[in-house]
Length: 497
Image (cartoon, rainbow, N blue to C red; front, side, top):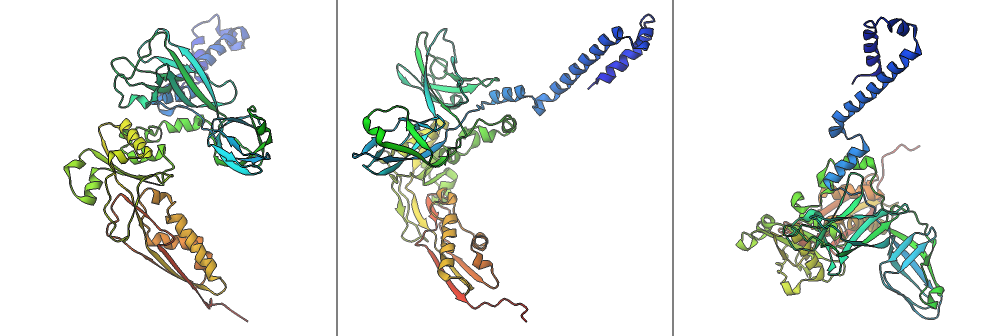
């Protein structure tokens, strides 16, 4: 990059060729120096810009380049609403039913939408959940329809951020389909994208090629959700109804109980600059990732148990079968426990699972199948009944008499169940196999008494022969965990007067 000094040196070298100007230049006449200095400054600025532009495709130091790169990769900066638990105190003499969908306001004037129906008893208390967002319906009349017709989503007028978009018309709702993956002509889908200025658009299809193309004069409704993102709400702070629909509501007091899920602001430019480098982070296409388990788990995070495996894992567990070709296998259990689940009477030889018939699929299982086939419709999806297979673990510990045996035992049980119990993340994924070294390290870290002096610890883990079966829900339960703690006069060698 050429600097201003470089250009000034070039000017000095060329002055000798102009005898009429040279004396004035040597004398420092501002009438000569000013415009020469201005030219050197402007050329230096242009040189710096060219130098930055040459490296910009690789360095991405300019915000405009980062936004353009994000738009090309389909990354959209959006907010995420906070989910809160509110407490309703009914001071009236009759029960009050709070319907989902009602709008509430906190002490800062932010709007919340009630998510769970609740009946508050007379002179009683009940809790319910709400999302911090507002929805706005935007009506758009299609004019000059063209392939991949786009409708711009208006930005929030205040400091809120776009967090959700739903699209409908006179014929019903459109389904969101990321980048038209597995979309055929005629499917009512829409895609969401952003340009290099982060203006968000809902884009439709191309008649006869992919999706549907709205006709001229069609009225399309966008229902856009806006959220304040990362907010702080003090526990116990008051809430109020946006408006009263019945006199009984004046007897209901609403207060903040707990923040369940914190809201999120759109990612900052620094994070967006780095995020675009790693497609596996922002690309949710399961075909690209080759990971349908992750796809289902991200869309259904509340599943108590989920295991998704392919033909190779199925045949490693049960042998080859032509019926397994191009098939994905799923064993799952939703929070409502609506699915069938078996219990292994003998953990060392769990019973065989059963294939769930089409007529017996639950709503959660059908939704999971639709999600997998929307990502790749070439797969067949087969559901197995999950099988509970508790892991038998026996722990024997000896601690000094200065500790209470029951307290130590309770801490050991708490640590094991938290790490390897039914609610542990590894257990919910069907990949829970405790290792001796991990348990020893866990207990010494969590239970102080086991790291004192000559305290002793012995762990025994039953190793079933069928641990590789993917439908097994393996975890340590309170019934399968045996903990024995004894106290002894353990003397630590020391100097004594």
